[in-house]
Amino acid sequence: MATAQTAAGVLDPVVAFALVGALGVGGQWLAWRLRLPAIVLMLAAGLIVGPVLGLLDPQAQFGDMLTPMIAIAVAIILFEGGLTLDFHSLSDAAKGVRRLVVIGAPLGWLASACALHFVAGLSWASSAVFGGIMIVTGPTVIAPLLRQAKLARRPAALLQWEAIVNDPVGALAAVLAFEVVVVAQTATGAGHAVQELLIGIGVASVLGLAAGAGIAQSFKRGFVPEYMKVPVLFVVLLGVFALSDSVLHESGLLAVTLMGLWIANAGLPSFTELYRFKEHATVLLVSGVFILLAAGMSFERLAVLDWRAFAFVAVVILVARPLPVLIALALTNVPWKERLLVAFTGPRGVVLVAVAGLFGERLAGLGISDGERIAPLAFVLVAATVVLHGFTLTPFARLLGLSAGEKPGVLILGGSRWSVELAVALKKMELPVMIADTNHARLRSAREAGVPVFFGDILSEAAEERVELMAYEKLICASENDPYNTLVATDLAPELGRDNIFQLKRVKQTSTRHALPATLGGKPLALHQTYMEANAQIAGGDEFRVSTLSEEYRLDDWRAKLPEAVALAELGPGGRLRFLAPDETPQDRVGMKILSIGPARPERKSGEDAREAREAKIASQSNAGTTAPTPPAQDG
Image (cartoon, rainbow, N blue to C red; front, side, top):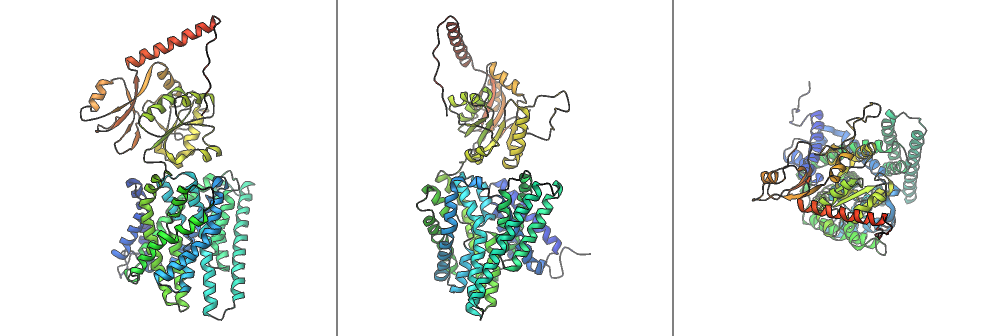
């Protein structure tokens, strides 16, 4: 029976595999709890269990299987990245993305090669190959950073598309440079090398597009049952990658990216389910690959680096990345703030380390000694950029006004009077708030109260383009249509998180055929009222109120002053908004703001009575033949 450790003290492969998974997923969870960049924690975890403690040695535990494992994981990650490239989401960022790929990538290759040669001290052969790989900015790193920073739509689209499209481009650039080196170092003819490169790119393109089209048609026509769609997708993905890579190394990355791109824009009815599963798989793979690559580093390999390595990293961050991007985006409609953000955001990830290590070994095999320095340089570059951008992207984006900000926003579905009063109270708490409704007339009260609105279906493509969903942390489904509330809450739960979605109580159905499953929809609010009950309470004179606790005014004082009020939410001094469940009480902390609903204050009540009396007088004059003035309609 296998033991946890071999005689040499190295972990058993099964235990090592479990450790990688635990560290990767545990690092992501801990980062979520502490609101830290997940990549930084995974990098630190890999270094601790690898070079520092010596518990994990991927090469010893997995042997010859390590390289193909990482290659397949990178292929799946890139395919999932291709699935995110929906042309509808590109919209006004299309020109910027084209220029980043067509102009920015070659300029970035040149700038990186110069930095490698003149600053890091590598030969031109190694610099040309590694410079091509450095075109890659890494979707494995960009995606978590975008979730954390909550960027505005266009800069997020620019960074996401550049990272995913340039990944295979960077790998192929490295292949091209390597073929040139092979021609220079051996007797291989230049014509043969160019022919091999063109054939490889052609085969990868045809395979990727054909596989994507074939999958799309077979899924649309029902040739594959629902329960087999994900397994079939995986098998085809692996087959396309392996076949393309057998023709030309690293061309499989291009094939799987094109395959994902085609499927993303094929309009598949089951696309959402496929994408969510692939997204979950990618989280596991990114975690595992980062742990393996960090644990695989040794102090001996890192010891070959000197001050030139750190100078090289500084030049890449401050010159070799920003300059090509700024030139590429010049004379475009991209605002200067977005250009700066994209220019100074260039984290490198898994693909760069994996591909750089492969080509470093091949260059060393050709007799180019400094090829062995490529892998350590790549690791230092990834570590530096991941840590730097992990901690600076969010504040940098906020400084430029391109992120959602620190305060959690609230999106309210339904433009009833209850919703408007709640939105006004949330605005008093200085929180971003928006009301969405499919009925234009129901949004009039919200517009008059100065509350931002969205007219349309929140699940529509128009909402994806016009509503910065990342700016809203909480969703309250409060329309008069219970099934629609449940649909929206269930559909947006994976994006916002189920703990951040709330819904008014559904009307109890007497017949089971009309009752919706209790597992669907959002969490109940503290009031636990239906749409009619909530709006009847407002119509009856109750109001929302915001109270702030202090040393002199504690929670017991609040209860004594407002005995009939029901606490709905609390906003802590740190800006954390929490909606309360039924029978849940707010925390008694100094600086805590409590949002509650209860009977109106006497002065407010008398004011409303006077307003209702004036409205009744106007109505009676109108009935007597006097036409009351009609206020002008407002739209906004």
